[in-house]
Amino acid sequence: MYRTLFVSASGLENAKKLVSSYRQGHVNSMTPELWQAKKVVDSTLHPGISFLYAVSGRVTDMLRHWSTLTAGMLTPGLGTRGTLLWQIINQSLNVAINSANANKSTPLSTSTMIKSYLLAVSASCSVALGLNAAVPRLKRISPGAKIVLTRLVPFAAVASAGALNVFLMRAEEIRQGIDVFPTLSEEERAQKEKDGSEAASLGKSKKAATLAVGETALSRVLNSTPIMVLPPLILVRLQQTHWLKRRPRMILPLNLGLILTTSIFALPLALASFPQRQAVQAQSLEERFWDKGGKYGKVEFNRGI
Image (cartoon, rainbow, N blue to C red; front, side, top):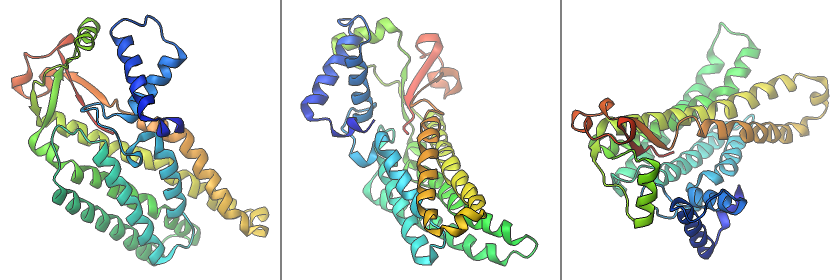
């Protein structure tokens, strides 16, 4: 997975040529080399405008980023400064990922990006600090329940601010709409590849943009749920065992191990919840697209990640 992060410019060009040859029918069967080339192209180039992703914005680097961030945010007894620091770092990374993986057919101004970042940071820090202050004051729950709720505070902050970050960073898409394209048949795709041309946009759809941004925001919650809920709950139970009470130094490596294990299995499933290239019935969008559907009456658009 991480090998695609360090592909050279010549390696990327070779991968693009190999994938293009397959789409044009010059390569008749899938080979390990072709499959690797497809992974390089898909993970390195934006599907909408084919620009080169920054390393920090690539999905293939999310496991490293999110595992590190989650470990920091789930560290027991962080305190106010630690909580603020990790929430700011997390939202900074979210801005990079959301910006790199947005639809790109509707540009986002720098000023809007800065405003969105500041609002997302304010939201995540407010939720985290507010809940950290509120949970200890709850009177009708047991001390054990308070510990569990305290450990879940980072999840509440990350999930709410992560979804908000997506809507803020991609609000222009909802206001102006995103490009939609007719769904092509395999023969039409092959011909486009052969000619070196691309399908023409049918126009911008606000309904498609709302669906794209909404699904992306939901996927952020799905990403954080298993990674930020299971490890702290398991660690709370382990900390009650006699073995771990005698070995408090094992808490940190156990926490890291739980986070990494959960991330390896949960992150790919969460990212695959919604397709990046979304196809919908043309009649589910604005009326002007109803008679412009392609294969099976469908149109498609880049949802983003």
